[in-house]
Image (cartoon, protein in one colour):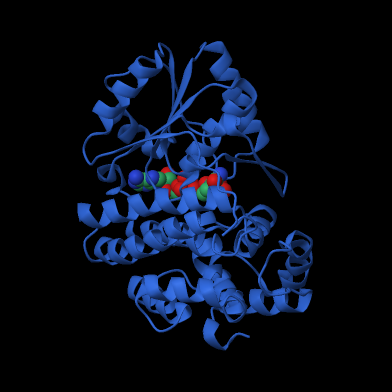
Length: 354
Ligand code: NAD
């Protein structure tokens, strides 16, 4: 065996109903006195429930998905004016993403309190959008110092968004199997992440207030992101990155929709990964496991439902092609990408797409 694995320096506090106490203790540990509390308007009330015991200097709710550069600039100004010494983000990937944009230029530490299963809190990846172009980068300054996970904070996440977000986590797991730095350690995380999502997400759909289901999903969100952070972006992430940035498609739903097609495309050329994914699902093949789970969850299934149009397929395929990782187990042509995108646009059965 030969591999390089990045274990990232980060503290993880996990406990349902314990976010306020954990957050207060962690802010004290950091010796911070001036908290910039970042939460979107929709999550402002949720943020107040966990922020009661911390010294909030300023609240900031100007959060926009994919972090437009002007939104990042305004937030950096607020951080400077308030002399913040720590950033506390309470929200989904968009909110964590804004905290990362501030940390990127200021070096301020982040304590992340995630309320979706996007997993951004466990990666050193930042993203900024200018016009229709999304730029991402890797910088350890944006990796939150501490994550405070509390599944009770995700109970209010609507079922449809919970499913899409959970499948975003599943995409981190699956794509990490063939990403440029795939290795046995992140594969172990990914396999446990898939198992935990398969256990948790059906419980969330059956009863959105089922805390045990939410805990499984949130635990998996961390595993999936830790796996992705070390493995890097595989074919799936490269495709979704272009679709999200160029066509402003919703992040989680795009991942949830595209994943089966990438799995169906790559699986014949990635037998070891295919076996590991199938074993995690407990099914004969990986794609059968994913299709069955998506059906059970009534998950997003066609890009057409999210504003992607058929006439954009050739242009999107051409935009994706240069970023296809050379490590992908199967060579990828523009024609393959057009086939994949057409199937994902229409939502046809991924098992017959190629
Ligand atoms: P999001 O943060 O935009 O949240 C989606 C919706 O859910 C929003 O309307 C939000 O207000 C609402 N919401 C969030 N938590 C809620 C809760 N507990 N109860 C009720 N409503 C709630 O979406 P997301 O999918 O979490 O994040 C997407 C963004 O994160 C994208 O910009 C994506 O690029 C980024 N991301 C980055 C990484 C990374 O490693 N850098 C990883 C994953 C996602």
